[in-house]
Image (cartoon, rainbow, N blue to C red):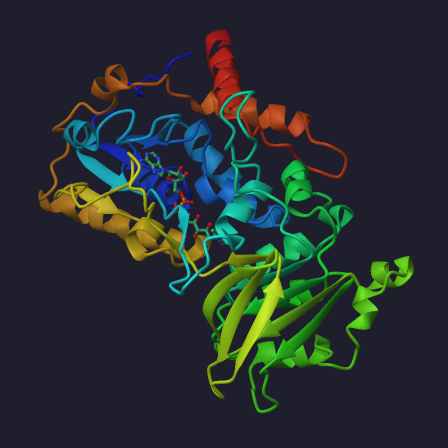
Length: 442
Ligand SMILES: Cc1cc2nc3c(=O)[nH]c(=O)nc-3n(C[C@H](O)[C@H](O)[C@H](O)COP(=O)(O)OP(=O)(O)OC[C@H]3O[C@@H](n4cnc5c(N)ncnc54)[C@H](O)[C@@H]3O)c2cc1C
């Protein structure tokens, strides 16, 4: 089966570039207001939904369930999914901009922001986005003989530091401190988890410049971390006078220095079982440098209020300080030339990697409104361009369809191991092959 635009529609042609939440929400709002529009959602990967599939934590299936809502957009023919098609690589942006009346860029922010401090090249530093992508089964492998998950996925060691006080930092710590059986019902990639965590973590230093009151994480996320079995929460620079709900929660769960560290480091199996990991949340602590020596990575921090300095000797540092545009400017990364009166940006690419699903929905709704206003005013002209039929013959790869995604979806659910809801395909070549077989059979 190949991709065909829905016949008999006379509305505007709309290209949405990127099938993450912001692209899908925009397609949804536009299709509701313009049932006659031809909306195509282009996606780099053979499968849809961006960070819903490869960012949101594997044990947060409730949040991931938004994909069922997005499925309906394509099932009902409100938009056409064109997967395995990276605009800027498989066809030029200029060709898409010429072929569609409206172009919506919804390509997200794919890369971890780097800490802007001196860093020893030998230090083990990895971005939280990369860790969560691996734990989410991102298809980094390209064929049977390539390295699984990319070279960066190597053991984190037993003592780690995580820089950042946002939800992504908490997701990372929670997933890395839970035991495999506590991840029941998730679609965690157990192979990646085993590669990253060869033994239970002993200590995690969660370091950030904010006070408990200012920290960006949600209270629910903090509570979830505090409730992981076998994890002891300690705090540094949590002030008795801090009136915030986060501070109250931490006072309830945080043990200060009352439990000696020896309780965690003991070799006694039952004690180890009871108390596997100490997570120390360091507030008001500014990272100033990362060193390396004798096989250990040293994270140097300075207290924001007292100016005192400390160093944490760890096996790895994970940075969770936000996301940015692809620094290599790979083909398909939007640049200044991706613009025009009929070109719009939505979601993380439009607002600088900020906000959750609800914020994306709101942003998509406002961008859809702007598009409708521009069409109504005539500053953007409808019916000017043919849309998908002129793009399909130009594509350098065979695109995947929405029905092919359903086949992959079903296959992954069937492959799920005990206690897991799916096992994602992590080999891009195999994924495309399955999609193409299913398309040939249809
Ligand atoms: C680790 C992590 C955990 C999160 N957890 C939660 C959570 O629990 N709850 C919550 O509400 N929010 C969560 N968020 C936030 C949420 O995921 C984002 O707000 C949302 O995904 C941003 O949507 P987007 O569409 O802008 O970008 P993305 O989701 O990144 O989607 C962009 C899509 O565009 C595609 N693309 C890129 N370039 C091209 C191109 N040139 N051509 C075609 N396609 C292209 C990409 O492959 C991708 O599929 C989390 C974010 C992260 C990073």
